[in-house]
Length: 230
Ligand SMILES: C[S@@+](CC[C@H](N)C(=O)[O-])C[C@H]1O[C@@H](n2cnc3c(N)ncnc32)[C@H](O)[C@@H]1O
Image (cartoon, rainbow, N blue to C red; front, side, top):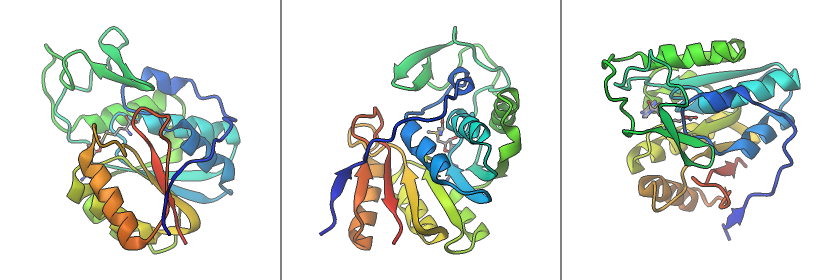
């Protein structure tokens, strides 16, 4: 009988700091720490939905501290419209929830010129500044086509935080599940009915059709989750 289970606690071992300066939505510390802690040299991770690199930076800092040889592919369209060539300071962003920040005016910084496809530069610059750039490959591509880049059972950890619609999230789950190795995690963000009903519908449809247990962090603002591949 498949169940929804509270994810076991993981005592944090690494101490990332620099990610705090990057704007974003991040509250999956335990998942990223556990993924790095359990990984072997040569491991290959992917993160779908990097935006400005907040969660990626956290992951990179953990990898650096671990001294392990872990490669991470970041998959994102990076097609946001705000001028993200101007890196926001804490004066422009406000706390939004645990581990998260938002601009005063939502996603747009009033008064800044709008420049398309600059988000990728912001992400790479943020990761360079934090000294973790070397761990990442940047794949500016729609996630719904990106699974073809990977062979089945080849990835050590997948995190999905990209398209939050039902269709987009469901396709990511279905397309990427075969790519993760047996015993490893396919994880994601926003299993929260109030905030992201599309993600909840997608995750529930996926877990029912695959007959999988779902692990959730209900103590976190945006409820990270994972499935273990069998
Ligand atoms: C919620 S943000 C990710 C937040 C990030 N993990 C952080 O730490 O702040 C979602 C990201 O997914 C990307 N995205 C949305 N749909 C996508 C798609 N179909 N393919 C690739 N990336 C997508 C967006 O460009 C955006 O940067």
